[in-house]
Image 1 (cartoon, rainbow, N blue to C red):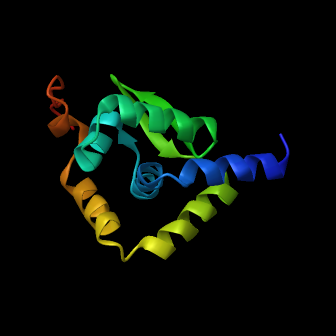
Image 2 (tube, one colour):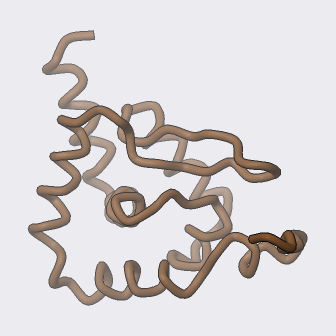
Image 3 (tube, rainbow, N blue to C red):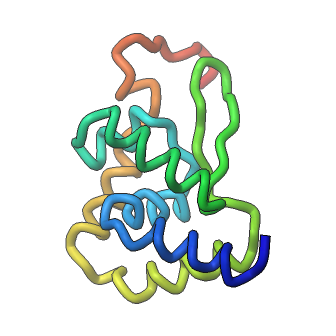
Length: 121
C-alpha cells in the first residue's frame, strides 16, 4: 500500500472524536474494551466499531492477555508520532484531561463485573 493511501486512512480514522480520544488514551497505556467503556460511556458495539476502524487503518493493534483482548497504539513510529502531535494540539481540552485522569483510576479487574482479580495482580 502506498504512503498516500495509508496517510489518508489514518487521517480519516482519527477524524472522528471518539476514535481520536481512544488513540490518545492508548498513548498512555494499553486498554481493554471494558476500560475504554469506563471512560467513554458509549455502547460496547460502538466502541467495537471504533476499534475495528482504528485497527483497519493501522492506528492500533490488539493482543490477547489472559481472557482480555488488549488494544495498543501501533508500533509504527510515524503513526505514533502523528497521534502524539494530535495529542499536543488538544492536551488542554477538558475532555482529554478527564479521559487521561480516569485511566489512572481504573483497571480491567475493577471495570469487568465478570472478572476476578488474581492474587498477584
